[in-house]
Length: 252
Image (tube, rainbow, N blue to C red; front, side, top):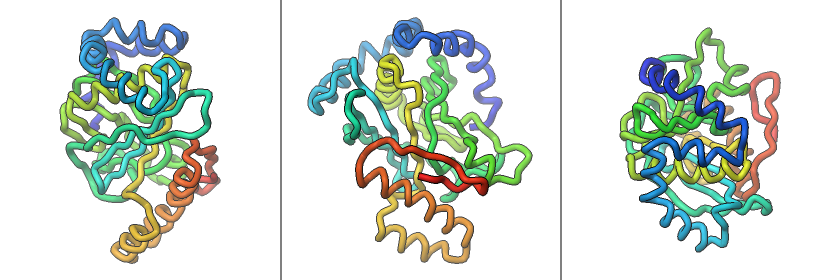
C-alpha cells in the first residue's frame, strides 16, 4: 500500500505498539487497550478457541504460520502448539482484492504484492484499513535481487478489502487473523512466518505457469527457487530455516 496511506496510523500508534514488543506477556493486554482489538476478542474469541480445540491446540500455546497464494486469492492459516514441531492448516481466507501481476515486488510504486519468505513485524490496531499486520518487505533477498533505489514498503495484511500491493481481507476476516496473530505473539512467537507464493506450486502447476512465462527466464528461475522452499514445507510442515545467498536466492 502506498506510504501516505499509513503515515497517520503509524505515527499515532508506533510508540505503544513498539513498547508492547518489549514484554511478550503483556502483548495481549497492550493490544486490548484498542477498541477494534476488544471488538475482535468479543466477537471472535469463541470461534478461535473452538477451532483450536478441534485441532488439539490450546490458545495459550498457539504458534502461527501464514501462507498466501496470489493467483488463488487465498490466505491459509497454519497452527501448532508451541512445543510441537509440525503445523497443520486450520483456516483459509479469501484475499478479497488483487493488485499487480504475478512476480515479485522489486520497487516502490510497481503495485506488486511481494513473493517470498517473510514474517510479521508490525501490529497496527488503529489502521486506516481497520486492523493490519505488517510484513517485513523488503527482506534481505528482496534487497539483493533489486537494483531499484527505492524498493517500497508498508506491505500489510489488512481489512477494508482495498489494496495497492497488500493482502486485503474483509473486516470480519481480519478480526480473526489479527486476533490469532496477537495470541501467538502473546505466547512468545516473536517472528510469525508469512510465506507468499505466486500460486500453489505443485509440480503440475509449475509446468503450466513455467510454460506461460517461458519468455521470462529470470522470473521462472525465481519461482524455481521458491518451489524448493514450498516443497520442503509441504514435505514436513515445519517452519523453514532460511538463509540468503549473495545473489538473493533463498537457501534452505
